[in-house]
Image 1 (spheres, helix red, strand yellow):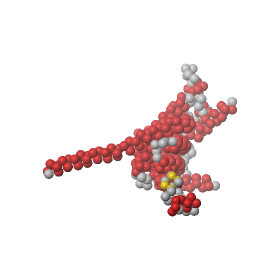
Image 2 (cartoon, chains in turn red, green):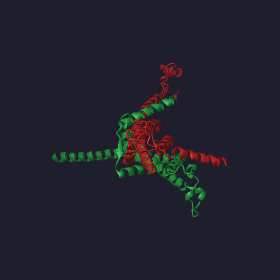
Image 3 (cartoon, each protein chain N blue to C red):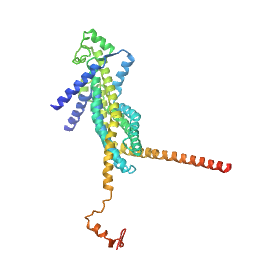
Image 4 (tube, rainbow over the protein chains, first blue to last red):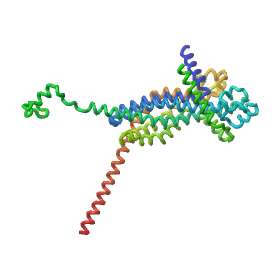
Length: 210
Length: 208
């Protein structure tokens, strides 16, 4: 059945992409999650009658900036933290002591922590050592991703989005004030000239035209 | 070309940062166990919960100290942020957790299925071929990934059906509370000053 094979393909692809990389999955799903959440939140602001127009002018760009900056900072900061954490473990700069001691015993003391060294590819570890190494690597990966996402989502994004949103609000309010100002009757408007005639002053009061 | 340049640039930055960080060997067994536990058990629902808790500790204060906007906007913004965090974290955590549990139920290895297992076809519905062939030995990360991806699909609907209305409801509640607070204070202050003025007047009359 073509549907079943398509379904199996998707499942196998997910297993291949994220089966050994929990941090990568957190970054990807986090980005999609922020976009979806922001779309819903923008609709919530738009349809909230209790929020005045002036504040909506701040809150809508705030939410849009929130999603945009979240994605950018998620990729820059969270991915950066994740990459650094991975590299630290991959090159053997950060390791459990038992694994490090074993690698030193195997003669890899000079290579440990060097940019080109890869603990996994060196094939020096026994299966039990590799298991210990992998669980340590996954833990550091998740810790790095979580710290990165806390910094990017809860510190960098709110400060940056507020800056963008407040600027946008100022522009919006200025635009609104411009449109709200009742246009004066123009000098070259023929009705203006007509009603400004001294003879018309007594006959024109308010909405009444005589 | 450009993508290659960016990836080279980021890899160079990563390498130079890792060079600065001192090498470390985790000696404590407890620390090693904790790191392994985090790697195995902390996934997207827990990540969402951590993000929500830290967001509550930082974002409202950042909004309240935004001096580029008037006080009213600051209050509404902070109220909306708190409401959004509460609604988003609650639904996000529950949906992710529920989806991962559901995937866990439907992700058994064929070797684990016995005659007593109910719904055997359903229990292996999401089991990948790599796990059946023995390439993928630990299904934990795969289950969490698939559960999170499915939860994102569920959240396309729940974001609009639950998250947004709940945020709106909570925002209005918090804004009402924020608006009522200073009024009450002013009223109390007014009543206090009125009372003290009355007292003063009485004292003046008495002295006269």
